[in-house]
Length: 359
Image (cartoon, rainbow, N blue to C red; front, side, top):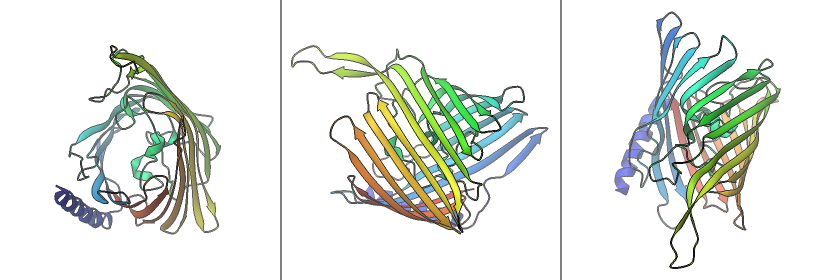
């Protein structure tokens, strides 16, 4: 089984490298009538890792393989659908294709305000709202996000999003169901989930699209400060410790989280600098405590150096601190890029190699 996974991963890696060096523009667009259009894209990210642990040192797999459709039915009515084959070829992971995003977005009376309905990335932080196609590093800061009741940070619901004061302030706030993953401990009697994020742009304009960009290639200077909140009463069911021989007791656990975060980018001589950071506070059935990260990239021409410091600090003594350094090359900006990162600290040491193409 391991040999088969390596063969699959190596084959996919070869295809990705070929495509990444052959294409530079993301997806064709078809005009379907007055104010109606359809655009298709393919996102591929191949990862190879070496982790300094006792077993299974190496792994090569398709981190993401997405087919993306976005379109407009009429002026002010747009939609987005994408599939994903997350982790195809990864050791111990079965191959499946999932509908990962599916929503309709409707503008309110020709304004800068929209109502989005469907399966949506939770609008909690810059990180959880970011596009996988324009990350600063090779992957998300997944260790910092401790959601319950989500499908890869997504949930069914509706949100209001938009901007104010010439895009100096952006907001997104919504009500959601709390995603019921198979085998999860979601409480069937959970209250409605409320999630929102507000960003203030001290420099430049705030992002207001469906997905935020962690690394805005060749963008004007910007500094965005944000704050987010996620709350669902009676979110999950947990077992309460009881004396041996007693009848098991199940209780309802609330889920509350908040974050303060920032994203920024500016020119420095002949280089471009990007700095992102976040501080989270979690109180749910999966994690109680704080997580945080600060990451930076400095790019000159097509080459970028990155560094990151991250912590996981659950209630108690088990603090985890990690450091990551990387080198990245942008052949055609985010449409074709590759990189290598090295992580060290309290987690097992890891070398991660990644290739991305966006067609």
